[in-house]
Length: 429
Image 1 (cartoon, rainbow, N blue to C red):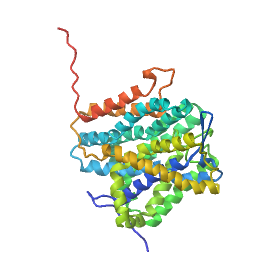
Image 2: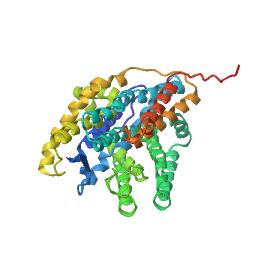
Image 3: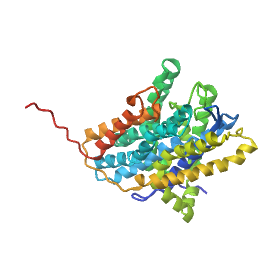
Image 4: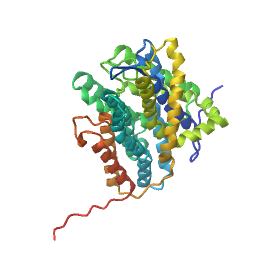
């Protein structure tokens, strides 16, 4: 019998999106905790990636969940914007919801490198820890821009429909050609084109045919998306892994390539085919409780899961000389649950301390549009700087060569998003 995939009624929570987002954040956390291959010797921390194990690249076609994060974000942003009193209030509230949880992370990591040095940690592991803490902020930097673009992209969606993500996909292919043939750094433009295109597909779930696909139609979409991805990998310049690998000449994620769009289509079809099952699963009391708890803490889970890993690695690898077993070996599979479980305990403690910054209710403010644009640019620029440079100040550098200027940009962006700022001109007496 043919199963219909129905949209949630207007104003109701879409439990399918809740499951997708919860699964995505769990996949991100689990993958980041299990990927590192660590060893320590004479003051130097050696790092590797378990996914370089032959054949494990296939896991990344589903475990690379950023397409689903932006897809679910697009649908959720459209739904919440429809309910908002005004676009300005909505954007102000969204920016505050995204940026306030970062404040305790800044407070900890502005102090942590010097504290670790005072405790005797060697410089190289400290640099790695500070870099890891900042790296994941790339997502927030791009997502802030995507959220700010939502009102314009929604207008484009309602006027041109599917043509919008198709045009962005075409532009991403052109950028890839320039990246591979002319000028590599131009590839970073695809951080906008690719993720806006995927975000736009979320609109087509909330207001379009994606939300009403049959199970068979969703399976066909999955086959088409994964099929195009396979062809791009087999005959194009794209690597098989959907996650950047150490030493690889090309990464599909840093910056994203156009193949992430076909992967997104495959993943969206895959998840939509499972929608009736996932929706029924979400109605079970235990699962519903997990969704209610995790929903208000998605950003905190994302921000603090790598600091939790840093704590566990610091104690076990640097403190006790633990080295990761060969990935795929029986020892690796035996240790993996204990490693992840320990990191989960540390993460739970961090969430107890810092999760409250995200769960506090908040509302938007009537901030001028130009000020909201400035807030977006400042915050995104600061987050990108931290993602690129990390939280560690070089020993031979001054205050301005470390994270402080980038943190200041984010704080300025949050201030601009919070309340109207009056700038009086200087008048000579």
